[in-house]
Image 1 (tube, rainbow, N blue to C red):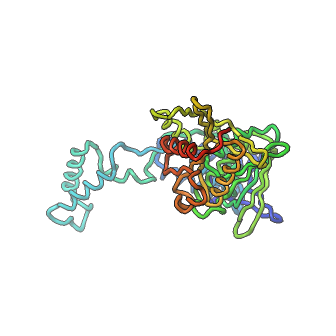
Image 2: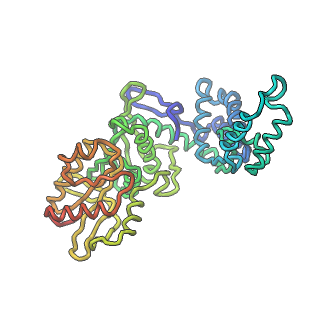
Image 3: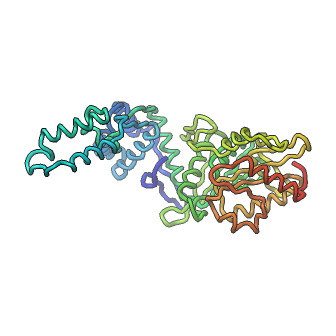
Length: 422
């Protein structure tokens, strides 16, 4: 993912056109090859040396690529190569411990160092270093006392992409960067699009959504980071991570309202846009932890479940009467009574979204669909603030949803005489 300073786009009659590179451009290929070769040649070498050579490369190749923005493009490409790199400390010893002990022994010297020569006279310096080496087992403590600085890290692994793959990744990342400033977006999934795959990413990323069936598929409306009051940066990154998931299927059309440099703009994109390929290798390749997986494991560890069994969600749950649909994460079935209750776990949410979702669930319950929702307490308004609006339909949780809270909500729902169905 790119940082904000790497993102470039031009505004043409109210529509945003993100910057892109052509895989057929020899200059772009030359720069991409040089950057990949630079990282490959620095295996086992410190980060500071790589960064110094990157700066030289910016001055050399940047103007050839673009006289005005070449350095910025190179920095963006290098930022994407960082996703392929793994850095490791140059030692297993703790540099902070070495540093602290060296300073302690130096401060305890019986007299101040002389004003000439090194900080400590040769014999005194060697004595201090020898004592720390004996205490820690580190042979050269002076050389490693600042090994925890970022520049001292060594390049341990690097998954070198092809020049074409790096350029394609750059083009996708520029569009993702524009979505950081989205107020909202709509995705129309056409007939033939893998809606279940798209919703796998929507749920995994915890995005705020509304779903409407259409004549040819589904219309997915997503809140943008600028529509929220808090956690906008984190939400914006999650929203941007949806794009590579969309690129795994077709057909679809995307329409986003974006705030770009203080002006309102529109971003439009569809699955037929040339030169865009997903870098995701599988349905879960986003780098995000999944609260749903943690809940499933917690359910398996729970002993007394009152006859309830946990099943995977059935995908999209249409509610034609309301011209909408839900995407529950799980289904809970009681083996003894045959009752079935759907469970949706929210990721991000706002007060408006949560109140609307609860109202939808109440309408769905009247039509025979029992659904519970769980929401993290760390987002939006507090559960106390919304208690009057939600009346217990929301299961609050901190970082992980536990099985006991869900079982308690099932008992409370049964006691309230909720309509059975599903």
